[in-house]
Amino acid sequence: MARWEPGAPERLQKAALELFATRGYEQTTATEIAQSVGLTERTFFRHFSDKREVLFHGQDAFVQAFLTGVDTAPPDASPIEIVACALRSAAGLFPDERRSHSRTRQSVIEQNPALREREAHKLAGLATTVADALRARGVGEVAATLAAESGTTVFGIAFAQWIREGERRSLADLSAEVLGELLTLTRKVTVPRTIG
Image 1 (tube, rainbow, N blue to C red):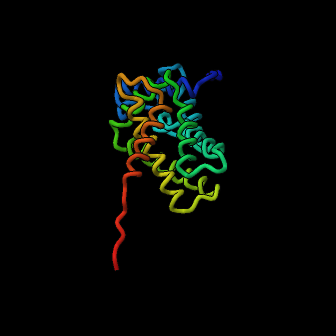
Image 2 (cartoon, rainbow, N blue to C red):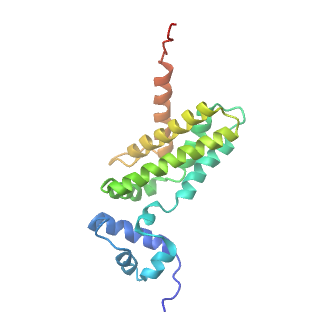
Image 3 (cartoon, one colour):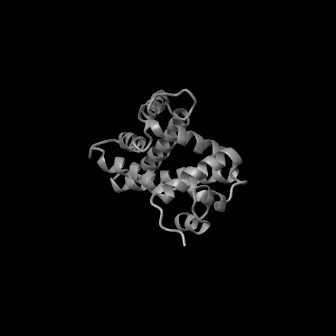
């Protein structure tokens, strides 16, 4: 009988990412992941429902970071200012020392259509959750949806820049820059009114 090993989920995640990156996601089994760190397949499935979940473990903390930002925004903040607070809060989950890990993880996801779909679903779910939190603060239906969807898009663009080779800026700085670009674009928009 295998004895309890501290830090098993983290060890399994690290091993899985290394194997996915070197051998390919489809070519790597849960058993191989577990065996590579001296654990059993049973231990693997005690922590993760399948090998895909190794890449998406931590989703709750990711969503909570956005919600914490929404909750701690000043009471008189505009919807987009609340989103800016949420982006700053989420960026705290991605310190510079995590950049290499995030880069490798994203590379694995990009090579597999099912994983790309799961990642897109994760971001869509995040936008829905943030929009609900904005509505709970009294933001109107359309404004909450627009702000949340915009915030999710900003995060995605900033994250893609953050993991690029050679990038040195923090995710918080990149998020603020991308959000600033969005605000600049929307300031220049004049919506023509229809006549009739």
